[in-house]
Length: 55
Image (tube, rainbow, N blue to C red; front, side, top):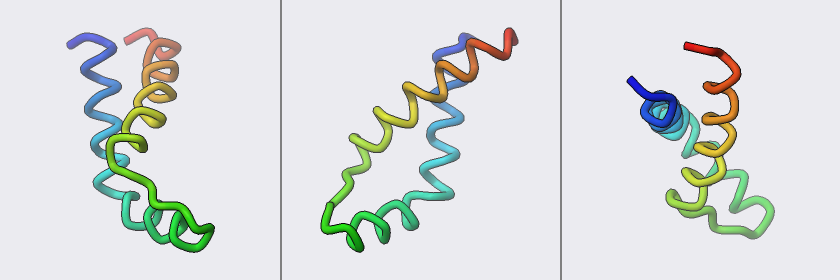
């Protein structure tokens, strides 16, 4: 499994668990987070983290 695949899987797990919270927070501050925008941000950070782990 590549680091990109690991980051993708981790991102999907985070979104599955936390997207409703993210959506609620977005509504509180007057924003409408999209799933794709959220994925891009989380994936980028997840990939950085995965690369540091040296799997």
